[in-house]
Image (cartoon, rainbow, N blue to C red; front, side, top):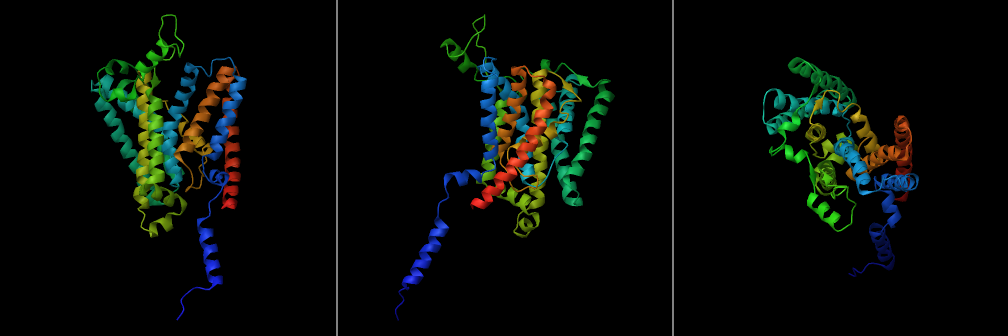
Length: 376
């Protein structure tokens, strides 16, 4: 019996194979990436301020460090918020966690003489507990994470104020800077990196120096290193690990993911813990930088983080987004905030620009996502 396929069958098989293996054009692949809109927005904002802030010093080494440091502080929060939003949830308690974590670091160290590393570990332990409770309540009760974490927004801020007033009689605690030198853990959240490189660049005349001959920029603030490091790790997790697939699946369709064997509850609890940890990292950086803690720190940072994530291409409905997009959203935030300062525009208008950026980003991201779906 002749088993040779007919010409018609062979042609059909080739067409099917070609359809499966066809390569999409580069522009279609770019459109399908969640960070595409944020990248385009970053280029536009950079181009605008290169023209508008020309000669203002915004793009000198010190000016670049200034807006990168602003972006880094928000970017640390946005990275964790991005993973949580991709997983289909929100955390509105991030800002209050910053205030509480700062108090938990400063009071034991300053008032009770704890080693700074022990106070930092206490703050991270409490953050882990708060994150676990948030995630557990969301999973156990079925309540929207918006409601659960909104409650913790007030609880954590109230705890920060209450504990501070009870133990010290005030809401600001200074003197932390005296405990930083020699502390092995505090050194991870303070100072600069690459100081030797910048001194060498200044000696070669590649960067400007001050009247004393020291480089205008002495190093890269450690907050920028934390930001880039967390973004790189989060990107690797999302794109190259099974856990990253679980995050996307949990945010896309939790029931389907659960039926497929994804541990949705554990994934979401771990993401809430990560957002609380990111808030504590932010608090550590602030406390080490200023040498003090304040119960009001972190006010509205949760909203700024969500804005950065949305500008970065994530959907509010979950299942779509990227850590790189969140980093670009934070960079846009830093560029606009410092750009307004350098161009001499009244900073009272910053919130207006922020709101407009959010609306434009949401509309643009929806448009680009529809185009990406059409291109497939």
